[in-house]
Length: 354
Image (cartoon, rainbow, N blue to C red; front, side, top):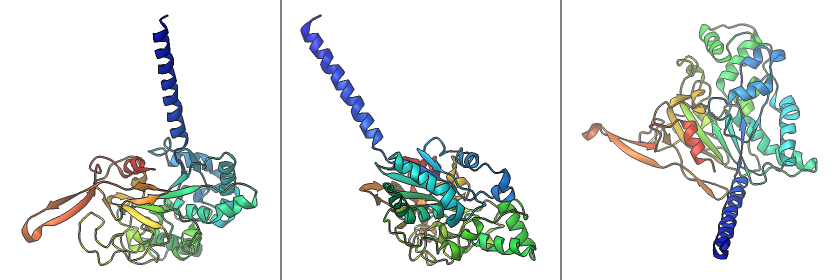
């Protein structure tokens, strides 16, 4: 073999191996994504027949199931600060610490009540793990889809009616039946924690400064039947004060003071005026419901409330474009997220995960 060719081959192989190793190193240092599901009403109907892990897996099958590194499952028939924490959260946090899963950084991706569970984890995980002689998790951010961290007035209504054992109002009965699937349950579990006042007392100001990015839906899963029980704009299960991350429970119409839920650029007199610490609403999705916003489907263009949030030195945000309709005094101006004409919210989120 020609010596010159041999040297070139060795250099080529070396360059190729360096490229492979560099790519592996970059991939291994990417942030890890951990899914935390929301409230699962079916588990209240038959706690003894519930497979929590299987339910947790099924919850994410529409889109996120094969895109995450880990998952935290928990039973809806238990209380957050009780068996959910001791029997379900702690074992997973211990596992993550021992495996160094979050050494490069972890992002918690939550839906619905998973938002509240994540806040409780963020407030307690460092103390729990340090007391066990383990390294705390490096949680760099949460992505909260239709977050119920501010509670849901539906939970207040349901707990009151179910504990009372009767339904004095047919509308109450219909709303609860649509949401829970039944007006007869074997356990109330996390419903107690989802009551608005209770939810807002759980880890209200965690010491962690990890930004909590919010993705808000604004259409009902239940034909508007549940909306009269929710304050302001809602997605059929949680009101905008909860999904936006507002510092108080009130009747809000938008997460932004300059942009409506449907993207219209117009002063919003009923917008959220203050947020919980490190809560940043990004996307407002007018055509999406509490359930569909976490799935793979597309349900119309979406807008932003805030944009370009710093996540551990990485900019997380969306490109936008403005569009006008009508003419003269009837002209209206809108702002939309680029590519939301064809991509669903979950796809948009996946594209900007740091």
